[in-house]
Image 1 (tube, helix red, strand yellow):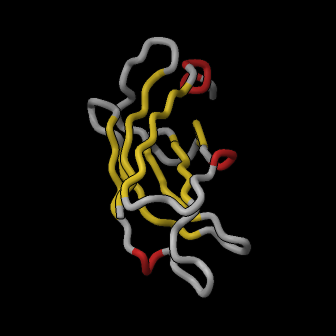
Image 2 (image 1 turned 120 degrees about the horizontal axis):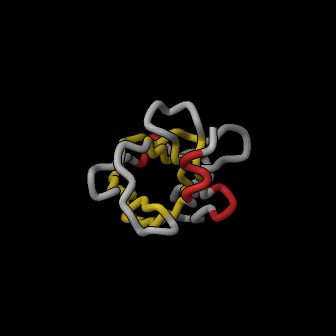
Length: 106
């Protein structure tokens, strides 16, 4: 299973390189971490994960969301937690637009 996409600056459309992208499966008690990667020069990312990482007693497909951090992984820039993709497909694609103000805020 895979999740991929592109992260760009909202105002300019400029690809954002080097940002840390983390994928999660939302659960009732504790969300499952599915993997992470950094965006490339084109702002592209791809994370592969297996069924074993998210499957539990009554879950056969992940409820997928992403968190995007600065390159150090310390500052959260964007999250899709409010738009969880329930029962995600084998391949899910995201187009993430981050406002310039969030990139420069400290």
